[in-house]
Image (tube, rainbow, N blue to C red):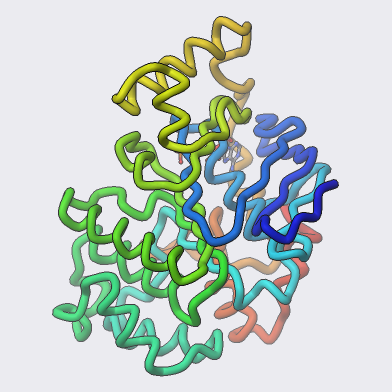
Length: 302
Ligand SMILES: Nc1ncnc2c1ncn2[C@@H]1O[C@H](COP(=O)(O)OP(=O)(O)OP(=O)(O)O)[C@@H](O)[C@H]1O
C-alpha cells in the first residue's frame, strides 16, 4: 500500500454493497492533497457511496479507506473533514446565522468563522432569514457554509452547485479554487461536465468503476475533443467496447432504510436525510445524545 503523504485519501480494494447492489468490487483510488478532484459520472455510478466511504459513514464490506493518514471515520477526522451532502442538513426554523453559530459552537470553530462563511457563500443579505424562507439553492449554500466552518482540511461536497444559476455556480467554483489555493483538498461531485474543466483532477466513474483518472487537459487530449460531454461519451463507448456492463446489478432498493445506523436520528424532516448522515450532523447528535458516533462506522448498515 502506498502511504505517500501527498495523498489526502487512499482507497484500496474497496468493496461496498448497498442493499443487494454491489456498488464497488475492489475500487482503488488516490486523491492528492491541496487539489480539487472532480467525481463525475452518471446517476447511480457510485459517487455518493464513494463520498460516504471517504467521510466514514458508509459500511464497507472490505478494503481500506485512509483519510489524512488515518482510517476513514475515526475521531481525529471529525474536525478535519467536512461533508456537504446533497440534502441540506440545517434547521428550518433557525436563521442562517443562528444555524451557523450553532454548528460553529459544536465543532469548536471560532465565532468569526460565521460571518466569513456566510460572506463566502454569498448569503450576507439573507443572514437573518430562517432557512424555511430560503430558496432551495440558498438553503444548499447554507449547508455548504456549515461545511466550511473551522476551515477543514478536506471538504467532500456532493453536487454543491446543483440548482444554481450559472453566475452563482461560477462564484462557487471561484471559492473552491481559493480554498484549494489555501491548502484545502476538495472532492466535488457533479453531473455537469463543463464543471469538470474547473477541477485539477478528474475521476470519471461508471457503474462502480473508475474509467478515467486524469486531468481536464488529459481528458480532452486523450479523446481528441474540446467538448467535455463528448469526451465523457467517448470514454463510455471505449468502456463498453471493452465489454464492461452499463450498470451494476440492481435488484431492489427496498432496504434503503436499513442503512441508518443504530441510534441514528431517523426522524423524517425536510432538512435532514437519514440515509446520508452529515459529519457535522453526527457531531450535533453526539452532542445531543452524549454518545460518540464513531461507532456508527463499526455497526453501520444492517
Ligand atoms: N440505500 C440503498 N439501498 C440499496 N441500494 C442503494 C442505496 N443507495 C444507493 N444504492 C444503489 O447504489 C448505487 C450507487 O448509488 P450512489 O448514490 O452512490 O450513486 P451516485 O453516483 O451518487 O448517483 P447520483 O448522481 O444520482 O446521486 C446505485 O445503483 C443505487 O441504486
